[in-house]
Amino acid sequence: MSSIINFRRGNAYETLHFPEDAPTHECGIFGMWAPQRDVAQETFFALVALQHRGQESAGIAAAAEDGLHLYRATGLVGDVFTPEIIEHLYGHAAIGHVRYSTTEDRAGDALNAQPLMIRYQHGELALSFNGSIVNAAALRRHLESLGSIFQSSLDCEVFAHLIARSSATILEDALQEAVAQVQGGYAIIFLTADRLIALRDPHGIRPLTLGMLGGHYLVSSESCAFDTLGGSYLREVAPGEMVTISAQGLQSRQGLTPAVPPSLCAFEHIYFARPDSDIEGVNTHFMRKRLGAALVQEAHLEVDVISGVPDSSISAAIGYAEASGVPFEMALIKNRYLGRTFIKPTQEQRELAVKLKLNPVRKLVEGKRVLLVDDSIVRGTTMRYIIHLLREVGATEVHVRITSPPYRYPCYFGIDTSARGDLIASNRSVEEIREAIEADSLYYLDIETITRLMGNEGLSLCLACFNGNYPVSVPGSH
Image (cartoon, rainbow, N blue to C red):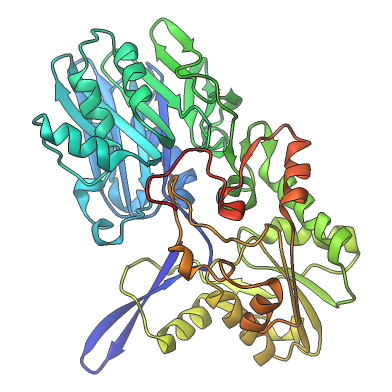
């Protein structure tokens, strides 16, 4: 995620952008088929629960007897939807979306807000998408050569055009044809007047869960949305599975494409997901605590205080503290009321941003040896500033422990990371990274430890950002 700060320069106000030194997720999606329930209001609450997955735009499409009703706009969920708007999104089913863009020059464009809705020969269709289609550019060029006109820069719009051009009369058949042409990592929910369809890419890179509320089915990027509504987690939508929910109940198509190894994004448990979410049946808080405890087994040293970088690393820091017997303290307090923009700041502005965003608690760290747990170091800028902040308030030593391997390769499956040249670990050793961030010591968990800990929970992972082995061939990545 990123932060903004408005500050005065002369007689004008300027806005600076400070990107967090961590990967950022692209989207969160939700859907429900629930006649006799207030589907728009409950979808709104679900999107609030998924707000951490995207803060740039939000939207809801609802299906009623008189057709689909859609509202989407840039902004946070609570700012986009008013009670009056929710009232007009009536119906028996709804899908929702929160977005984080990986394309900065179009990030604030309302045309790229989702759900996306089209009208074609078989009626109206809305879709909410999380992930990335790596062959979208080639598909788009081909479709445009056939006369297709695109309304957004969203790569998922190719799905809509492939469906519209299909000769299949059944939507599920048209989707199966589209999946066979699309390559990437994604989860997607479709809504028509008479059905809701959820599907996941054959590798299962992006998560998609199935839940239930009062006898009605729900789908979501994370199970925390079910908890918010008082619903329950049932299971994951399997890699390559298509689930159809309608008045006839739930139906499933397995094996949309030839079987391939499942490859859930490892960063879902390491960083992206809310701690209270279950992904592939594994609780994220539980997994992060195990990662923190593993750091103690591999690289413990004598310190006075354990702390985590808010918010995603708190669970891991607690796990480290419990395993080591060293007290856990909230040495860094996060300002949660900073917004977003995409204006790149100067070095001086970046430092100001960190100081406003994260404030060290002097009395907890002064005169103490501090061990800081974090989930990743992407560019290295934020970690270096945090270490400086802790030293400024009197920390005698600052040691860093990371619950993932060095982040060496960019992601092409819906995660916003820098080009490889901007990644601090792409061409540096661990010791060189330690020197760059000015820590007293630095240790990463290795790929073998991540694979063992998550594999013991039955998880098969995409580790491409650590080892460069992409589960889907990416044009131009080599």
